[in-house]
Image (cartoon, rainbow, N blue to C red; front, side):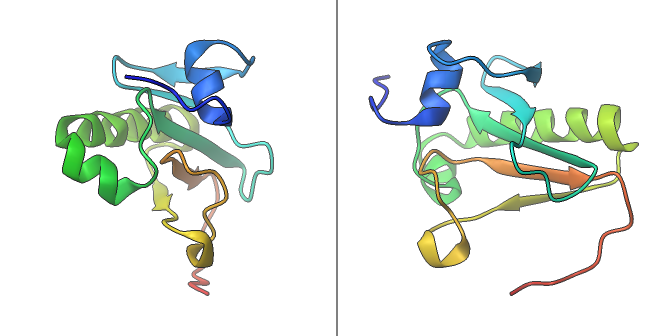
Length: 115
């Protein structure tokens, strides 16, 4: 698979840019969010580039399953297994980097503010 030259997360996957990887599997990597919103806030990204979670689900359902499995592993190790997994898809939903990424959020009792 080719990687867009301007994708920050692709540069993490390829090793061009340094990032503190907290977990990984054959299909995905996980690293700390640079602007954490909770005591545990880790991003999980597929190794291959897809713009959003729906595109990943259509193109490679197994890679999406592997990403969720990695998110669960991170949540178990970092937040006792209790977590929220959030995917933002599109600008109005808050997506700012167009390489699909799930936010593993936990480490405290979470409220609910959907908008």
